[in-house]
View 1 (cartoon, rainbow, N blue to C red):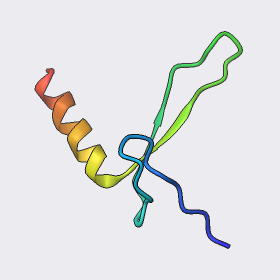
View 2 (cartoon, rainbow, N blue to C red; view 1 turned 180 degrees about the horizontal axis):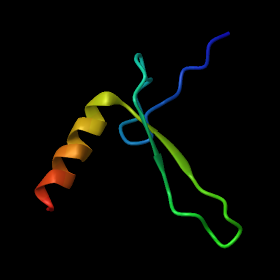
View 3 (cartoon, rainbow, N blue to C red; view 1 turned 45 degrees about the vertical axis):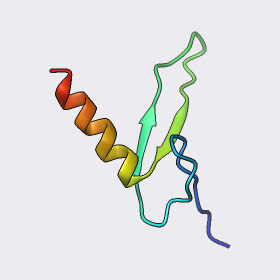
Length: 52
């Protein structure tokens, strides 16, 4: 049985490997992990480049 993660941004199932985003650690050194699809990653990357 294969695991098919869902993009935490748009909610679509990842058909190809996308990216991972890790949040900052909390007081117990636990981080949140988010899956992101390629389309949402491109949008995020574009917005990060604009903010420079």
